[in-house]
Amino acid sequence: MSSIMSGTGMRSRAKALRERAGRFFLKPVSIAPLVVFRVLFGALMLAGTLRFAWKGWIRDLYITPEYFFRYYGFEWLPVPGDPAIYGLFLLMGLSALGIMLGYRYRWSALLFFLSFTWVELIDKTNYLNHYYFVSLVSFLLILVPAHRSFSLDVRRRPSLKRASVPAWCVHIFKLQLGIVYVHAGLAKLNADWLMEALPLKLWLPARAHLPLIGGWLDETVTAYLFSWGGALYDLSIPFLLLYGRTRAFAYAAVVLFHGMTALLFQIGMFPYIMTGCTLIFFSPAFHERLLGVMRAAGRKLAFRRGGGGKAARSLSGAGFSRDPVEGSAGVRTTLRGGLLHAALVIFFMLQLLVPHRHLLYPGNVFWNEEGYRFSWRVMLMEKAGHAVFHVRDPDTGREWQVSNYEFLTPNQEKMMATQPDMILQFAHYLEDHYRSEGYGDVAVSVEARVTLNGRRSSLLVDPGVDLTEKERGLAHKEWILPYPRNAQSWMGGRKQ
Image (cartoon, rainbow, N blue to C red; front, side):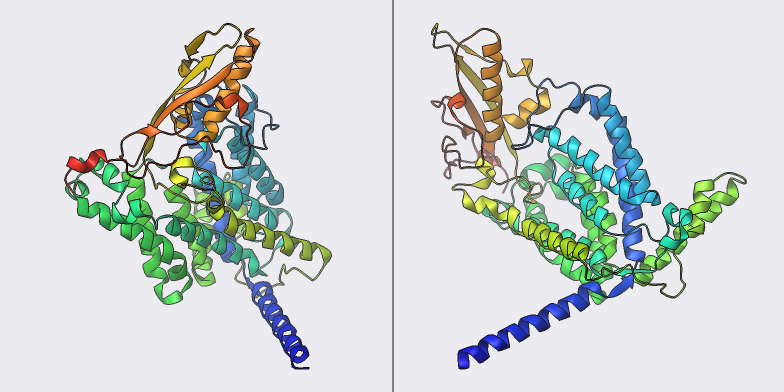
């Protein structure tokens, strides 16, 4: 009897919890934070696309290479040739502009997500954490009505205009940012980062030439301060941004932290993306004021252009309304709404679990990199190496070394030399290449020496293994040699 009552009580509490969560996530909130997020994200993506093209990276990374290191499971994705790859980047830039202006927003968000993710899936050589972040955020943008204010869509169809959205439309971006920061902080809780201040102890002295702060960067204590401060920052910043009384202080820390990383390291758009995106933690009143500034700037631009500036006038005219809430773009309890919520639950469950999949593999994740990508391990190691591939033709007994540069770009060769899954892919590629040259079933082995965080180089892969006999997959690669824990650091003689 008591167990029945207990079960009934648990069901009642679960029901009450679901209802409470439903009220929290579905209650109408101002659309302003979502609109500002859309405008800033679109502007940053447009700037990033233009910067990519300006620097010639489209040709360097997607036209020059003869071979691409494809992600496991995405080998089917076609590689656009020249000039199609330029068309893909043009589509990416135009869709980013569409997101920023709120023009044909749903299509713009969808096309940006598809084009950006397609490009990123072409070659894992170019993997960066913030590229992964951009794909995730652009996917989430497809799901939310971020165009229902301050957009050309509203100008075109005034009936779209809304002053509020369900709270989940804003909270999912806060949650995504929080996941990135917290996982990045957890990843810093390792001996090299906390006890040895590595790899910052290697990187910071290289910036000692900078004015004002350069002298500090050559001090070991600075590396420790940056290491511990970075871990504390990542683990606490999303919670400090959530709390109103600490938000301004926390955002000042965001600006300082990412400003320093932009100054000290070559990490592209990442500092600007995080600095812009974290504004979403601010109050609706803050974003309404910000949109007011944007609207005023649009009107000023239109005025200066006289009869021109149609887009600017359109945006200013479709600016955020301070009128009373006209109605929420809320998600009713429909099949579509239920599927959307289920998809979001699955999405964020994966976001919470995927970064920890390295726990399923034996060994050091920094060494074997099994479960390393997509886990928000941002700038946590200094890894370098050199891989010499040996080919043996069993029919003739002839053996020779491979000149990697004949097949790979310098960047591909550098990245491949330290990542076992890329080494395996290249070995299979060599097998196919020499078979096409008329050789038999060649054997390919590798002598890959790698140094991690300043320690002396060690063999990464068993040099006696014929890699052509090993299959690609997600299972543990037993041919990766264990991390040499007692490897001596070459920094032993440096100032500590």
